[in-house]
Length: 367
Image (cartoon, rainbow, N blue to C red; front, side, top):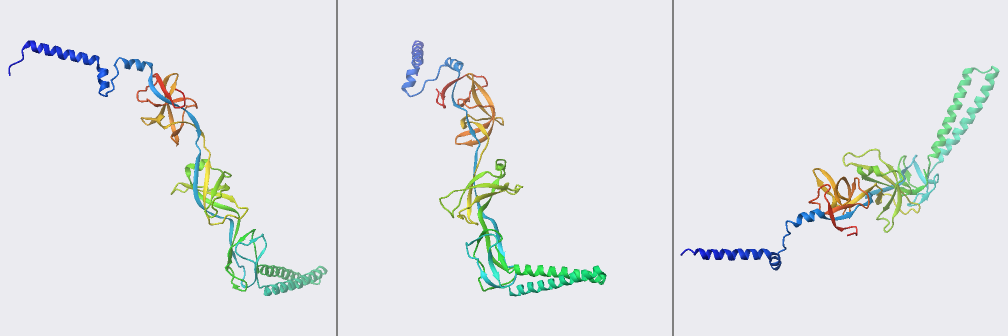
């Protein structure tokens, strides 16, 4: 192939230069035609930064760091005992029945007591005789006709007779089982006419006027809880109802195995609706301190610290904060922020302390 003549090369070069110059002049039109966004002029960038880095901001708000716990526990009666026979014998009267209420001191069960009554009568007779003898010997001793040793004997005999009478009366009382406090009896284990031995179980007996529920709470919640704090509770045994109660007591220690503490809740039961042994879902609304809140996008992490960018007099200001909690897309923080101040949520990549910013959009409603 013969080399292109020099004059032809010059003409071709001139054509290419002309096309290049024309393309540069019409670059915006050409790029738009093929769907490519034109790049900004290098000279325009400093002008834009001089006007401020474009950012989107949102207002600082305020919220309480409230905590809600719902924990399941089992209920028990305020007081509960197992009734036992204090003597042996035949049951002649039985008032106990399932869910029957009694007042303190009511007779619940009566054992046959013929022998015990006779023992009391005998002890009373012996005491009366011993007291008569003591009175007579005392008078003789005062007149000098009775020895002092004899007086000591009759005094001792009278004291022993008093003790025997007291023991006989106590044995008689043990034949009657009385209610230790106002409460409700469970199913009795024996019936009238049955023979029971001493300490045999008769029935369970509960004071259901208040139901106690014990639950385990995380140790982190302990500083927020105090006796008397109001709570609510629900139970499957009474569906559709919510019951009010209070914190009655907090255990004195934290369980090291699971880092929880035992909490006792008292739920009044004046209508006797609730039952011991039922499960309860206890809800505790724990009030907390009030903190500034910012959108999650405003929180930045850098070299082990947490900060936000605040707009101050048209410039970016870096404010170090501590995260407290997350709530529905916002973060509760501890730091020098006040409600109404603006923090930057978008456009933080090119920020430096003191750099001017241009607010393009305000999520708080301003623009």
